[in-house]
Image (cartoon, rainbow, N blue to C red; front, side, top):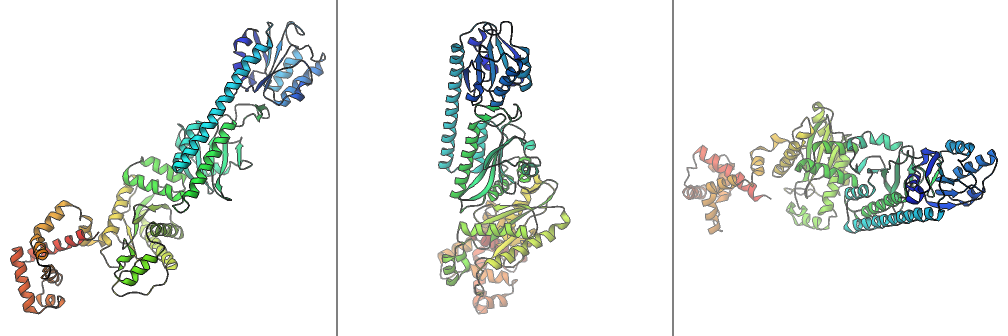
Length: 579
């Protein structure tokens, strides 16, 4: 933020003195923190680094060794440059030994060949410095204001990282303790190059201290965490590390280190991230949030597939050149109280896993099952009732074995975690789950189809009372197909056309319901005697009810085709009535 020696030489008061660079052109980009006028040889002891020293040379040593020591002392303390006005001590130019010493130390040495009031130079330079400090102050104020707003708004990690990169103009990466990328912003650079081999690259970045700059890699790093629990690192790549000579001092800081403004920025960003984590401590972990973002992106096309693959790889999940299988796990009952008994209702009302916590427990169990089965993939809640997973397998040959291992691990984890409850005859266990898998696909661009298929299978399997370890598409049958199509207007129109008259009759005669009679007849394969027994009616009474149904629907109940159509309509009606 301070003016450089090069910029100072371009100021009008300096140009008036006809400046000529004698040595040290490598240091022209060193910032000037202050201007100091000196006429004594031991001035270095009074300097702090970053000063531009002005002198007429009248007090400098007369011998070569003294001049070398003078230049060496200035370079050691980290001054930005030395300006010598000719005419009083040196007439035609500075001594060659002084120029040679300055060149060796990379210290800019400038001659002013025309008399110039030093006060005009100091005024001009100090005006620039004050402006730079004011700019730095304003930038720091903007940093504090920006991140305070983000904290109040509860901004997520991706937004915090984006804002940090925007303020810094540099790439920013947030990683967990396993060196997996949680969020990043390349600040206009190539994300592919930024994240390529990230874990190995990150492990080589070993700064000293909680917030420090690693000069070898060019990354400014700060630890992210609160209350003694660190959970990640925030890294900012500063490109200025190799521009200046190491070992010098610039404005009170070592050359090649980021400005204070960037250090403040990464620390404020890290504090905002840590605070957000504390606020969301009962919500999903950051890794799971990224998993959910990527799965959602695949389902709704909100991000390019290549970006999803890149972010997943940075998180440690390789999706390219893998056999991918979509899996959805959901509770069979949306509400545990639907189990159908007062006992299960009481259990549901007191269960800690009710609502979002119940879904979160299921998501954690699915993630643990993946780890126990030694599988890799993305996994998170995909809606309010279901947890999705996209398994990344080496090839199609291991698909069945992998799914079986996953289902077995999930069942074991849930049995270990569930409290012992007595089995109730005819009741669906309130914590029963369905594991559904879509068809395997050979690329990420087809992964959406597998995930959607798995979600539809899981939805349809809720009506299937079989306790299968994994439901696949062939298992859902006609009832499952109709359940998937229950919102289709043409299916609803078909039901009304086939059963509308009978439904209207039952609505008018609540004490004389006939739909159950038709259901018993069709479910017993049109065997009237078996159907009458199933309906707990005498055969004459059952036959009379069948005759009335035939008149109401204007249909021949002895016709196989007509009964098939009615049976499909009944199954569709059940699907429509089932949430």
